[in-house]
Image 1 (cartoon, rainbow, N blue to C red):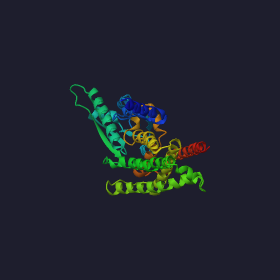
Image 2 (tube, rainbow, N blue to C red):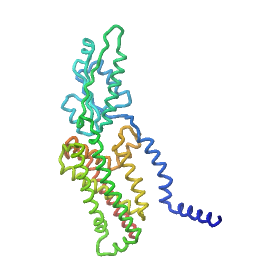
Image 3 (cartoon, rainbow, N blue to C red):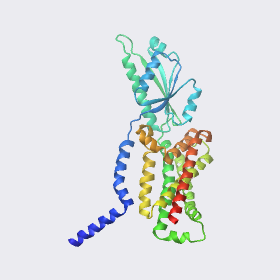
Image 4 (cartoon, rainbow, N blue to C red):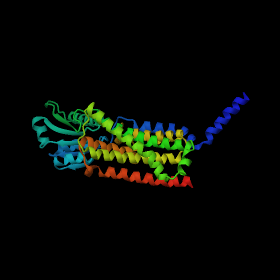
Length: 368
């Protein structure tokens, strides 16, 4: 028994001696509970909307106040013409548009009936359905408060229109996210594990004394994964088109260029992880905890970012997957060009440069 207890004690000391593994073992449950607790929610708050009020009468103002005070919506701006509707949705962050018809109040007073048009961005079908249901519930509540005994009940007809995904197809939502996860998995995770394996087996020192420059060695290991990632992206696009009738409204060449940019960003992440880890196991854990989990939970792939706490919304801005999902949806569903997605593209490019500089700096420190 003494020998057994001594063996157990040795294993405990071995675990606590490796600070990085210890950090993963004890911090991972805490991080996962916090992420799942705050990120997984079907309730949406502060969804950005635009309003086109052609009447601007007491009834429409009362309804607008009721909508904005509900906590579900945040007014982005008030539109003055229908031409601005398409532009508002092309900008990407508008989730819903509300259009009041002309002479709204007069129609209610004379005919006990008026019409409100609700236009939703259906690139995220669940979010669009939830928001339109919120609006319908608010309008029903307004009707109930206006009921007068002995008078014909007034009716507010809601005309719902789903942009970019009229049938609310789920494939339109998950295909861009699947492409993102696959590119991240192949480019970042596999690259970090591959380079860490070379260091773990002692092959990296042999490669470093070879005639090849260290950067050439890393690029040589990364380029095959670039090819594999592009092939996977094309495969997913073809399956989405052939089986799920996924549209490609925009330019395929632009989409592939953006895929190549995101692959470069993911490779930079993988290389950076490999420079701070020494074993495959540590690299895999770091990739799963630092890349895959945040990319699935905080990128808008599964759960709407608008429903998350403000802190997590800030954190989501540093996750490259968020920006690539926005880019891919805008190109595939909205037919957007570079004039629309230039900000997201610039963020990915800047992130890639910063990660490469950080990796080179860390790599030089380790060589010294």
